[in-house]
Image (cartoon, rainbow, N blue to C red; front, side, top):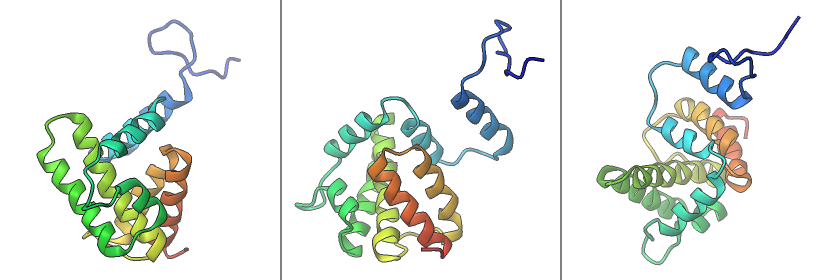
Length: 159
């Protein structure tokens, strides 16, 4: 008996695990959340290089470079300003890349405040954020995944 998952094209080739996961998510999830586009982008093979470039191009907040501030856990006020910069970039985005960069700034600032300060800096509840942060942790490059995992733990009350 063959335990492989047949390819819908009928070629007999197996589906890749990532394809199965995406199909499974589509079948079980409701409407797509805006963050799902970022999760998809971070799940791409070149995600680490893309995220590094996006963070390098991200607008500074005063003299503060956002990626370093979020990873090291700047104060909550600075993280809130980075989150608002992300919201502004998202609202004014002329390209999909700018939109995704805005989403990254927004969510990584929120997760940084949770991870480093156990502080909520957005209107979403901890319960709403918990699954989003777990989804981000599953696809982010290592240092960002660690931040998302810690933020998700704090969002769930297990931190």
